[in-house]
Length: 397
Image 1 (cartoon, rainbow, N blue to C red):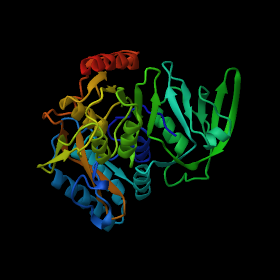
Image 2 (cartoon, one colour; image 1 turned 90 degrees about the horizontal axis):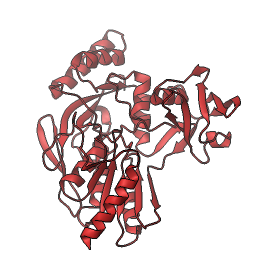
Image 3 (cartoon, one colour; image 1 turned 180 degrees about the vertical axis):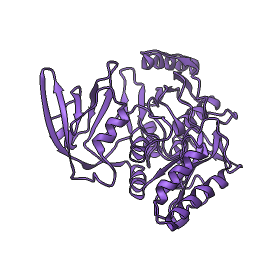
C-alpha cells in the first residue's frame, strides 16, 4: 500500500500515473456516480478528476479532439496510439493531463471501490530521506510476513529507496498494473534496530478503509477521511449519528488528496441542511452541486486541513467554511480545483484532460490558491482543534 504524501508533479509517466492517483489519493472527482453529465466514447463511464491545471487556459473540446486525432493517425500508421496521445497532451500545455493504458485505467476505476493490489504497507519519508513503514494493514501479505510499523524499508526488488518520493516507493512496491497482478512476488529490504534482512512477499487484492472514527476522552468524535472512494459519504453520516449527542466533531481531512466529488457532497450533506456546495464548469457550461436535506447542523464542527488536503477534500472544506458550518483549522490546503474528463482512445487507452474548474459557494477559486484556514495550527493541530471546539460549545450554550 502507499504512503499518504501528495504527489503533484506534472507530466507523470505512464506507470506512475495510476499509482499517483490511487495511492496518493488524487482520485477521480465526479461523474462515475453521475455528478457530471455525459459519457465517454465506447461505453466508458464519464469521470472528472479534480486536479490542478495551473494557470493554463485550454480549449477543452478541441483539446480532446486533437489528442484523439493524434491517436487515430498513429494507429492508421501502425504506431502506438497511446504514445501519440501522450505527445499530444504534452504539447497541449495541459499540466495535469494524463494518458493511461486500459489496464491502468481499469485498476484506477477499481480503486474507487476501495480495492487495490499491493502488499498492505504504508510508507513515510523521514527528514533524513529514509523510508519507514508507517502502517501495516491487518491480514495483508506484509502483516503475515511479520513486518511492523516503524520498520525501515531499505530497498524494493534490490533498488534502494532512501531519498525517493513516497509515491515512487509505492510504484516499486506495486509494480506495473498490467505486469504485477495479485500473486506476483516483490522482495523487500528491511531493517529493525540492528537487524537487517530481506523478505519476499506476494501482492494480493486488498481493501482500504478510508473512514475511521475515534472518541476522545472529552467525548469529542474525530472522523478521519483519507480519500473519497465509493460509500465514504454514508460512512460519515453513520459516524455522525453514532457520536454522542451534544458533543463536537473534528473532521480530519489532513492528507486527503481527493476522490469522488459525489462522495464529498454526500459528506457535506451530513453537516448541512441542503444548499450550495460548489459550482463548476465543463466546457464553459456552469453547473452546481447541492447538499441533501437533513444534515446535523447543530453540533460544533472543526475541519482539520493541511497542505495535503486536495481537490474533493478542498471542495468540502470550502463549502463548510463558506456556509459558516465549520471552523477550519490547520494550514493552507494544496489548491487543486480543476475538472478533468476522460476520453477513450482507439486502442482502449484513456486520455484524461482538463475541461474546467470549480468554485466554493461564495465564488472563490480553489485552483492554485487553496483554502486558507480560519486558524493556523502548528504541530499540535489536533489540540488546537479541540480548543476551538470547546469555545464553539461555550458559544452554543
